Image (cartoon, rainbow, N blue to C red):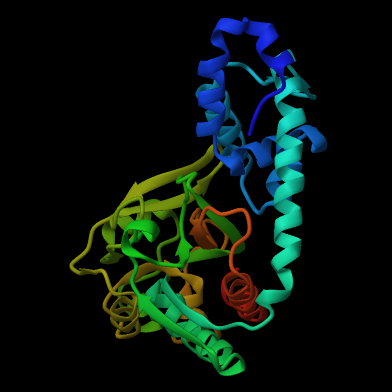
Length: 325
């Protein structure tokens, strides 16, 4: 991309070579995103259009400004205003955007068939609850497609480990990834009626300090740190107990056996709560609710098979949304 000569007139002709070098290094995706922000006049609108977060859009525009060494936008709480450099850059950026749209439109017809291979990683709970069946069903609908699904609770590195799609539960802060929110997953604190009869029910969160709390090792806050809602916001309570595990299914079985109190995603024990095999001890006071996201490497237009697979998975989650909230 070549900038108009007037851009360099703002800073001096001697800097033309260095500016052009920086422009050539700038990400095409960031230039397109910049054009979208200018046209929408809002980071939030562009974030919604591209299934991004506001912070990701802000970081990408900030990166573009850093690469070029100029301020492109003046930001206030009410509006965005283009700087002189921003006005000049926008003229070129909107041309890049238009050319990209034309290119995508030109090849759109070649992508009608869903085929190829997808490598994905999903959490064990959701994998066993619905994703194994949902993804196998998707493959059956598209005979030319194969999917390799790994059930793993760790936060895999998509790019380094070669994953095309990851379903994640938790907090996301990697701006090099695209994340589409699916739904939120509420956690619960529960125990078997047999445990409650033997040891009594805790009435306040602080009562848990005298109970046997069975801990799930994959909590982002730590196995022993349980979050509660308070008058001044959420707070953490440090609990203890005789057993901890990184396997949610094993923790559920221990709770069903009356061995102690557990802090787990509601979807894991939904049927147990409905049929009375487990009792929700603090139905309105548990402070942990995590988003479930479909995550893939940053690209302006993900492959059609990924977009369709994400939508298929999203619909499956929403069909049993009451398991999670």
